[in-house]
Length: 255
Image (cartoon, rainbow, N blue to C red; front, side, top):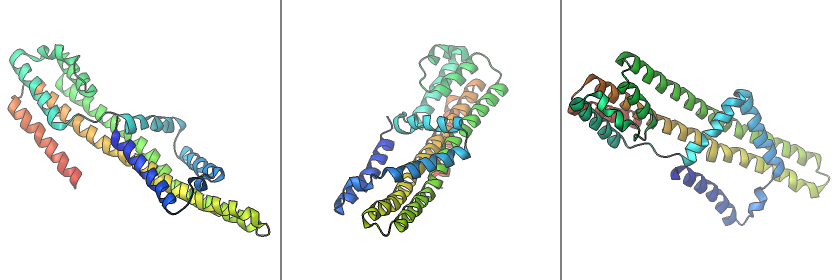
């Protein structure tokens, strides 16, 4: 379970609710069905206009990884695993790694090392690994873009809801009993739009991008490690090479 995702969303929503209570308000004040229909329905419609239904469904399915996905394997642990396979391969041959493949947890490493053990030519194997890494990046970036688009239009739809609420107020100036509902819709619609964007949609997009960065880093280290194993590189040199890749990636991320 990805605790940071669930914890972050919970803290954000709880902070808003707590703020309302501290100000002496009631949570029921922000439960406006009309505002919810305008903002969430409008946001979904605008997003559906920008992407296909399949892309939205796939992006929604990716939420499972955001909130319940397992964390990526630590880089140091992955490097040690690859170096151990390199040592075994140099002593007993590449085919000696076959019994270890079933026990590998990392799916990309499991499949690509299996192809190496099966005798796929190095040039072809490198091409396959690069294509899979690139495809995975494109798919996950598309998921992030769906949430980024929804987060970008949500505040604007909230403003539209506010304008609708104010129009309702202006039309009922002669009926004071109906003014409250119009004003509530106006302000709550804005709250829904800005809150959904900044507490949920944009952070989810950022989470997907950050997870993709870490996954791509690990997959590129795996790719380089498998190529080194297949070429018979000395385990010590392979370890230094992989650790240097991890350090470079870390510096790029910090920048």
